[in-house]
Image (cartoon, rainbow, N blue to C red; front, side):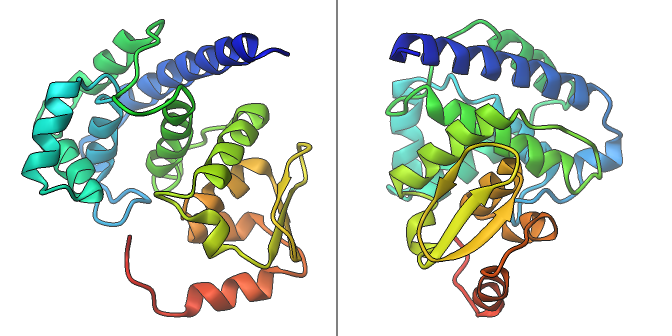
Length: 220
């Protein structure tokens, strides 16, 4: 498959995932909208709001960066919280409106929207005990990108000395003690959703991973 074909396939997956997540959002109760997501300190409502900002423009991004004094994580959180002031019935409408578009936020590739919709979809669904299957090929593509880029997830540093191996797809990364599981769980692991991933993981490296997670860390 050449690069353009792969890009088209990724965008088709992004479209499908946005549309299916919009359907899930339509079904949420008022209590579910206010429930904590997998993102520490973020409500389901905040995560949904963040996903509707994928088409943010250059000028808006610069203004948000200035307001956050150059702090990337603060900028992302602040823009999400401002967007979260919209009525909740707007988020599904906005997501559906993105279907078919190939626009991205400044400075990112077409792979970052894939990571966002796959992972943030689970940030919403998992704590609500909602079933949201993740396409294995798309999860593998996203996990490969996360492993390669470093910032902001730092997966290679956090998971050094461990080999990740998918049990449902030909995907692996790293070297060392093996940790196995569905590629969807491994994607949650490499993006820092470790506690959500753990119940679906196994292998000789699992005790080492659990030991690392038990050590105090500074929240990202």
